[in-house]
Image (tube, rainbow, N blue to C red; front, side):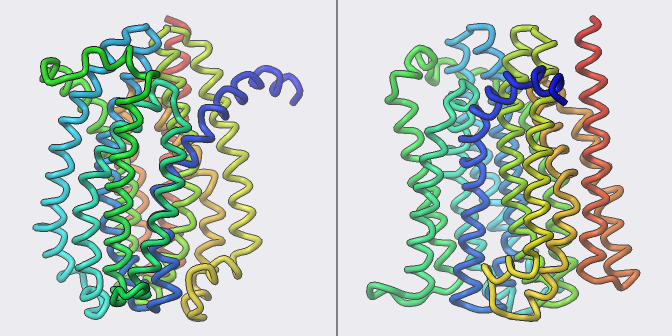
Length: 451
């Protein structure tokens, strides 16, 4: 163990220094939905909480498509920075912002004209659907400023500047919570808005975050050298294609996983509003640890991209393995937290005892799949930094849509195991994804060392 620790100690330190701000920043995306759930669960009741669950399960699918597209720039920035091609970084940012603008508008229209109509045909409780629609519409508008925030954030993080997005995410979440409580309860002369209130708070929060992040990057002296050739004169279809060749598979990777969980939420809705609300409680907590693990993954992608650009493949492998170690330790701790406090954590969201009873069972399963969830997302990050995105995309499709979701349907619905059966199926999907991605990393990294 001493030899192992001494080998990876330098990488633990550098990776954690880079990862911790990214972890906090990534956590901010989930905390927005967590805050929405907590506020609604305590101030509005079980039906509104089920509406939040339904909307989040559908909107998260759109959200991760946008996040995945924005991730296309990060490994490219890291690789160009590793090769000291500074001016190329600004060109990549401009082209990525064009892609983000178009993506944001397309995703908004998909929500407004697609999901808003489809929600009536998902066999959900009518009262839940009625409250879900205005919330979903507001979240749909918020995807546009969020895309700009994410793209500029990924540019800064690709260059190693990670703390600023962390601070903006922290203050953004505070703003979201304060506005959410004011709008939902109806304070300072404002009429109570219910579920619609948390949607409005999220829209305002994401708009402010985008403006502040853009102001920081374009006015800071740290980025002057990188932005010398930023502008429309450098719009280039080949650069856009280059970004999309990474961003699109990454978006698909996240889509396959999150859509499986969204499908599980819809399956929960067929069981009843109580099961759906319980699913929202448990998945919200699991999503927090997942987003923190994805912060470690994002840092791993940056380090892998830098080392790949330098063609230092031994450092790449050592750094990647240290990221696996870090996420294993972190997810073991969160697993213990879920298992030990499973009967108490749901009280953070609701006081409905029937919801708490089911959610506490799901948290035990969540504790079990923590290790698989953490290692699979780090595997995706490491491979993304190396530019390997197509085969991992196929792996995620197989893991979640060929194995995970069918198993969830079979166990939960066909075998009548209910909510726990659905989650056992999801756990199987995470296990398959983790194993396949780790084998891919081992194969690819060793191949680079021997060539």
